Image 1 (cartoon, rainbow, N blue to C red):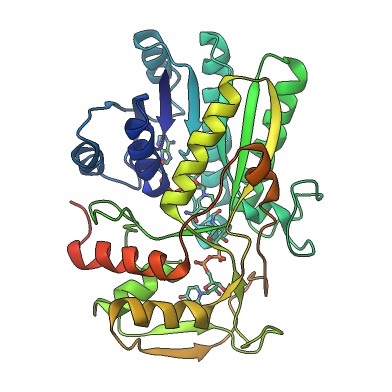
Image 2: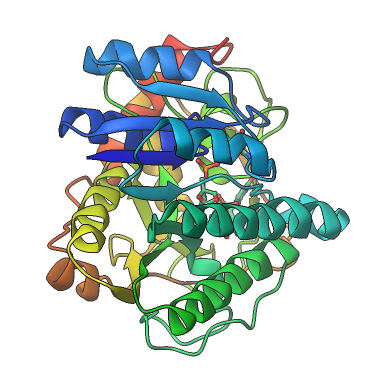
Length: 336
Ligand code: NAD
Ligand code: WQD
């Protein structure tokens, strides 16, 4: 079985490529390296002792995709390629709509042309907006606060329409919660350009001395310690969920959404404490103002993925912090 992984050199994509290769799949990666480097794929090959096929291809490039589908028999696609910075999407909405939505439409058209109608799509818990917690898949989605989040909601809707128009499609929408951690080899992990927007890479750069101080965004929320609650999920657990989803779509048709989270909520201070334990370092942080757009608390009801995909998260926040720190210390200047 051959899987096309768009955005396969990125953070979640690279970990998924490792799991796919370990499971015996043939892997073809299409990435334009906008937010990654080809060396990540060398490391995937080093970890697994297997090779994958790679194309420097933008998913908006129709001819590039045609070449991939004509040179390979693709059984299913895992679609990670996209821009993901929430704040940037507010400043540059058209760039996000063009890359994420136009790119996805071109990809889906070329899949249909090639007769490949099986896809796992990287969606996000952000589509739930301000729903009561825990989030469940049958809640109304789309009350989203950022253009980035709207791209995820719109692409889910587009795939819904695609399925309605042609019941041969088999589509899995994976709504990720907050992925953190790294492969335990320390060879691949999250390696954002510039100053990180997300909590975990920020913490680990403070711990290693690359950034002076973490600001905790808000200490006056109505939560157990006043800081926001999120559902953190180890990236390797998340990667494995893609294998479960691929197994499912290969044998069925239809469209289903699944929450991929631990089902547990941890506060920012919980994460800081776990990180201090894992790294043996005292973290320099202050409690600052709330960040605009942040919800006080959300976490998953992951029971649908547990029962229907037979997927279960294995790793706790201690392991997530240990693996993040291991990656950070082994790659103080990132992956070159
Ligand atoms: P990432 O930026 O590390 O990986 C995305 C990859 O896609 C990068 O390698 C980038 O170069 C590539 N890419 C971007 N636009 C492309 C294009 N037009 N053509 C080809 N390649 C392109 O991000 P990630 O954290 O691995 O996220 C993967 C997917 O999961 C994204 O769609 C993201 O929105 C989604 N997601 C991420 C999170 C998270 O917190 N990391 C949470 C929910 C959903
Ligand atoms: C986590 C917590 C912050 C940085 C985002 C997207 C979401 C999904 C995952 C893609 C929050 C706090 C953070 C800092 C802090 N991505 N924080 N100081 O905002 O839950 O989710 O990434 O789909 O769509 O919105 O993740 O890592 O930015 O924040 O106190 O310097 O850490 O307030 O409570 P978030 P995050």
